[in-house]
Length: 115
Image 1: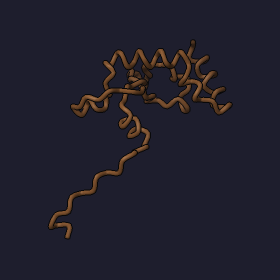
Image 2: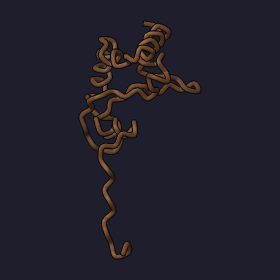
Image 3: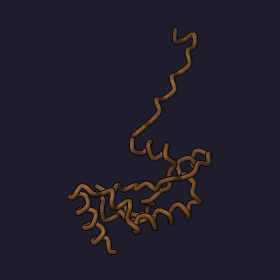
Image 4: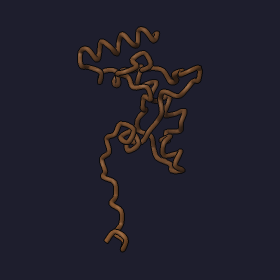
């Protein structure tokens, strides 16, 4: 599928309020599995922090709604430099990048200075 065909497909799904169909498509499921396998099913954000966590999803760096032509692209180019567009993440890191924190930050412990 060309980038133009992908863009048209995604735009039509968005117009019909059916973008979820993209994430159920065989094209996406195949590509997602490929990205997870290439990264040994490890969350790249956790790995950067020296932790090992199982990746359960693949995140679009360039969001599908804003850049529909990149929906099935592993990489994108910006100012002549190629970057990864699809990165494997654990559930918590995926929530972090989308600003959907499930947990409140832990409060700072009470110390004499805070009294």
